[in-house]
Length: 225
Length: 289
Image (cartoon, rainbow over all chains, first blue to last red; front, top):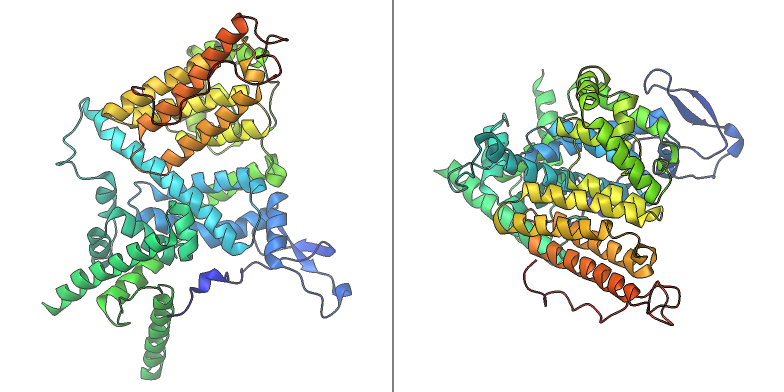
């Protein structure tokens, strides 16, 4: 099999330009402005669109944050959904706010940004799950029997409309679900997932392997029956 | 739709599945592109293609633009003065905000100011800032929801700015929040840890908080908590162990200073900034938290 496409990083959609650019109102919402290349540079001069986007985001440019949000919010929401977060959309807002605040601590290309962003996402999901575990106790005033109480994430997963997606996620362990979602939705390499989950790359490979094996066993067999 | 369109769509779908399966290398499990597993993976990928609801997106974008405009270059929010004055100011502010004013502010903000500059500014506030109490008050009613990570992020930001003593307050809050989220032995251990950290925070005046050892221990404590935050089941005893070492060091320092061992009263002779007394035992050697 080939190396994941994510290892090299996919070209980013945004068009970013070097410092000597002119600005014009862009198609990214009212009042936003997106840089447009000045012809003076001439052919053969290259620049990194990602760096320009990042620089603009750091400077607080509306269009840059709109681009980042439009590119990544669906992925963040999807990951939160797959992890059974009760309110994925709230989590998207929290994640992006933290990204705005902490962008000064980030350096790197688009693949590195994706990995950095999903580190925030993963942590927020863990926070959310810890909180959701606490809430039933607060509401009932007593400690529930954990063996009989469905996990909050399992309840949230019931909201998925597609039964096959729900079936697939339901047969995976939390860690297998996390690895597959980071790989498939987050578009992250094995190494990135390993870093985010604080595990060795080999362990991530093994989790992915077992997840696919389990899915094949359960889903494929269900069809042949 | 013509049959050739159908065929093209089918081919495009198959191609997309092949690409998706290529994303999952290093596995000896072969997946048939037409199998239910491939279909599951396609749907999983599609889950990440749906943007949040339009209204939610618009609200988020407004929020991000406000935040980015108020905080250009992603720099940490400007801080108030550090030191004991900041602590007293914080206490005074908390005393004020804990009563009627809090209820009025929360009520007002909950219905009118969510997503606006005030709530955002409060959410960005760090311990010691004027709006920090408001941030915490809003969090208690589910607005600007914080969580242990946010407290740790605050602590990190304060450490970067050199306000280690204020970072300790944020760490204490993080541990309190973790304790509230935990059950049984872990919760007890974390409550103990919060107490140990509070004892260090309250020990300013001994000079310990001006030492490099203090700064290193704050960094160590942050690292341990961050490490634990990455697991779903936080090991409270590990955090409690680190907090206990932190507290022991502060006590030893205070005792050493009381005996007047340092030339300037801040540590033993020749080791200014160092901690008097015996070195801390390695992790795992101490018993109860």
